[in-house]
Length: 80
Image 1 (cartoon, rainbow, N blue to C red):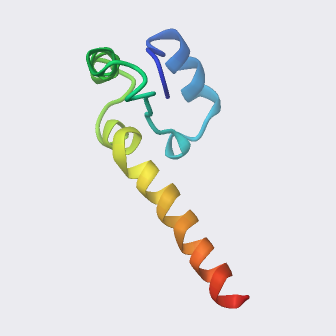
Image 2: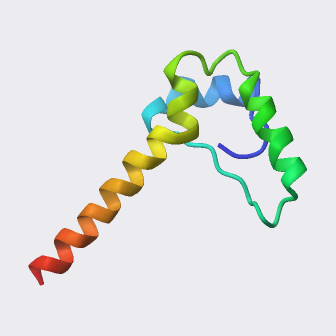
Image 3: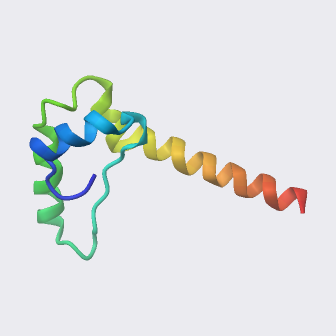
């Protein structure tokens, strides 16, 4: 997720995508900090991101994705 995909775009995305595959990102430091904060504040107010889904989108999904990618790279390097 980037920008302010609420409410229509976020509804559409959640209707076709696995929520465990979504994570929030910004173009910081190229996008000013105040703008990044405003974008994340808009997502904070999204009723679609309730319960653990908000935490998943902000943190957990990315950790799972990047941890798996790092583990795969280490495994491939060892097997060479």
